[in-house]
Image (cartoon, rainbow, N blue to C red; front, side, top):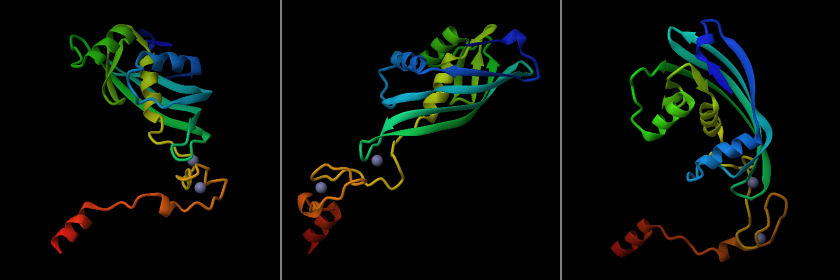
Length: 193
Ligand SMILES: [Zn+2]
Ligand SMILES: [Zn+2]
């Protein structure tokens, strides 16, 4: 998936790209050192609608992305479907002689012909070909949920017997089973008395 800079003009060109589950697995396997990626399954390939054009010598990549993943609820541990949808707009200047301050940026600029300088909104490009893999990975990573909860009012697991309180009602005495938390302020107050 690439953009040929010489073919861009001021009038936007629209294209649709699909990023498959395999592609995402490969992309995230590269930086598996980071724990920022959710353990999730891609149910439908990510679909990018991309418009690319020039403003002066700046390359603009904008559009939207949709996808659907299956993740584990952080409270009740059930797997559930999570629809993802996001918009993006990147304006990349020609890097010319400039070198990104961070090694990651340098590697991206060499490898993809594009690096990001401020989130995914601004960046630098170098050379006539921009490989979109790195940018698409950042866009997807940015829209992944940080906390996965199957529904707003998920009641989680019973701390005593472990059933999901969403679908089972148990008679456990949770109050008796959990040690009382004593706030440090309460302890201080007692000491003062
Ligand atoms: Zn849940
Ligand atoms: Zn219970």
